[in-house]
Amino acid sequence: MAVSYRLSTRRFGELLLEQGRLTPEQLEHALRSRSDARERLGQTLVRLGLLEERDVCALLAQQFGLPVADADKLSQADLGAVRLIPEHLARQAGLLALHRNGETMDVAMGDPLDVVSLDHLRALTGCTVKVWVARPSDVREAVDEYYQQIRASAKVGEILDKLDLTAGDEGEEIDLATLRQQVEDAPVVRLVNLMFAEAIDGRASDIHVEPARDRITVRFRIDGVLHEMMKPPKNLQMAIVSRIKVLADLDIAVRLLPQDGRLTVHLPDREVDVRVSTLPTAHGEKVVLRLFDKSAFARDISQIGLDGGLLDAFQRSIRQPYGMILISGPTGSGKTTTLYSALNQIKTVHRNLLTVEDPIEYHIEGVNQVHANHKVGMTFARALRAILRQDPDVIMVGEIRDSETADIAVKSALTGHLVLSTVHANDAPGTVTRLVDMGVPRYLVGSAVTLVMAQRLVRRVCDRCKETYIPAPETLAVMGDDAQALQGRPLVRGRGCLACKNTGYQGRTAVFEVLELSRPVRRMVLDGLNEDQIKQKAMSEGLITLRKNGVKKILEGTTTIDEVRAATLADHI
Image (cartoon, rainbow, N blue to C red):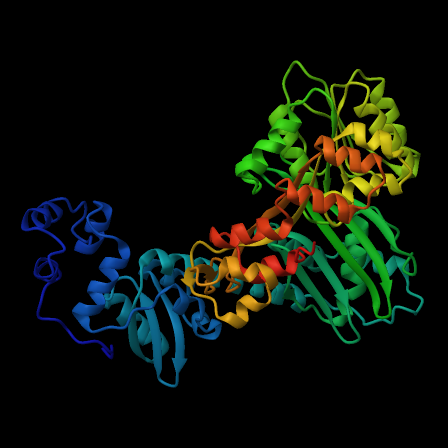
């Protein structure tokens, strides 16, 4: 058998004793504790907690003179080489093909003594096998990731092979009867279903179906960043878009006007609500689908990134009997998630909580949620008036968009209700002046608003591949005046691995700017001072700005310089 490693004259147990990793008593105990005659000594030691997987991996590499394949190495495996080994063999033997170079194949495995599997692999590929030792858990994770990609690719290929559609220009007249038949064909249905399944499984928040001159591109937004996932041929464009329109109850004959709709994806354990938006472009209709998990919301307020004094201030405000709490930030910055977390914390059987939203993104047990629907005249203002006749204690308004809604919400906060809402503004002081810009009198804003909070989302460093480093001066230079706080400090970044799809990030958290309206700040609002003057006063009272909170999270190892710089502006006072 052609396998490229040397046999060792020392047994694994002897090596452990020589290096002082185990005492003779521990080794004897491990040998007696093997649950199966086929269980390797290293596996037994890991099971008993006497050694870590990485220790066994390093010792095996030393014993047989083999290189070690860490998670980074596994994440760089060639998909073409992986395809050469059947999935059942890869799982059974705990191995992953890394690369093939002519008649030599590099393979990572946790058990280099599994000569039966290696012999089978040599016969199957006709290659000389070069073995790399890897942690079994890393190999299992890599096998899951790569073979999932292979299965998804095979499904797409199988679906596309069965499709026989004629390419058409978006400006041409089409036979609607023929198009309706095409969108009900099994291959088109399966392709769209697969798109949804991959997006939900990959934690995507949005799906983009984008037409170009000679192709279609399907991209998923994961952790705030778009990733290209599929490239169906151009002749499927109308069938894919029309299938989505049918599911969302939109008119497939209307292609020159934007449309909005929604649909629900039913899964065995939950439902995912999907908002659908179409937009005519030069090369056909672009479709964006936003995904919302409709299962009950259970996130705690401490899990969204608030901590320390900021968390105390926010919790203090949401437990007040009346007043207005406003969250600001751009679309997709997690404002609604923060409000839901607050509702989840303060709800009790003794309080009447009502919301008006468009759409209802999550369902919260114990909260009465109203869907604002402009098509039937159910505006935010109209719904809010109706809610005030429902004996509310706490009211959440999904977004204050106009002067009428702002006026009703502010007056509600002044008449014994706790009101939570969101406003589009750049920072916390700007949120206060935004209400004034909407036409709410300054004396009402100063009296009603108790706390404003701005937030931005940043990606978290991947826990699996994080590493510490000392940033170079040129890296710190982009942080301006905040570079001094980071100078010479060990920071964290992600190398990129299979778990984070080589991005170095997995999941997101938020950076916050929390402003409690103290008496001096209220006086400034009443006197008509601008947001810069209000911010200067608030900072003199200890306001932690978005940028300063971002720097804190960099130092804590939660996120990176690039993320904070992209999400926040430098403080200029």
